[in-house]
Image (cartoon, rainbow, N blue to C red; front, side, top):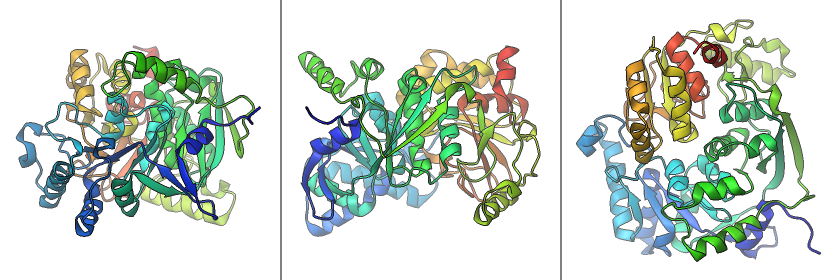
Length: 471
């Protein structure tokens, strides 16, 4: 009888072409996703006279520099000539190398880590690469997905293979039922707060337990998206009926008899009972509260009913120094209540929380209420925006005072003018909050979509459970 294996080990073994004596393996790549930052890799192919080996296994997406306002003006909506040039280069490279391109005006345009699952490009058992760290998102469907650099992207484009060192395995089990107002974003922030921003360095994470199993696919995508914020190579969830129901009928998913064959194969991917992991971590779902970050790392997260921590509570001098630096940047005083921190702006969107479920959660809080600070929402894809409009969610956002924008990565990383002013605080559904992430001197507090909506109508970080009770 074969030894029990994890889903990661099954996928890894299925993709190994050869292994070097030092353990580095050459792996076959099933899907490779590229965005505007890929121009260096394509330029290398041109210089070397190489072709893209398997164009049909590569997909290009304009997302990082896509404008969120005046999209109908096309390229004219982008004021920065360098950003325009990068979009033009992607367009030309996709055309010249025969790669399917989801351009600005494509009805399926969106953030690459949103449209991959939406279109069924992401599937269980696949090895997926992209020149972006949050490629871990796609692991929610039972894929091995990870970010790569430009030299690695060149190799993938030219050979449809990649050299990789095998990571160690970590299972994070979240058992039990979460309470009201607690979302997938709160779960993953709780995980990162527990293990630290470097707690999963050198590992892949498999998320398991009843709280993970009861998450929708959108929730699982959120959790896997932020695996990289814990230092992990990737995050994964074993595929199940939730996965299959989500994928059925999507553009690139198998059809007819091939669908039945695929599901039968996908079911065998799930981690075997008693499969060993190099490290195990567990959390009690019932103990998780709505979370908010106070510092400049996702690990600086606490329940909203907590207080800004005291650096002296840190276990070592390095941690104390880091906390003191973060508090200076965030202009916060230890002991201050988190739910009293006033904010200047609210942003809802990104590959972490720009999906239809996220928009529904925020809209539910906004119904019948008005924002007291500037706020905007950028759906994760054009298709998500259309769906939200069909459900009337856009009207709820606009009536509450939100700007209703187009899909892009820009506000997450302060591009195309979508930035937070120096000294301003933003309650944001993005995934990173380091110094300057959303603009020079900008202060970012990471929250869930519902928590962001609560902050928008109160002007401060707010426990969304209070608003849910009074709705």
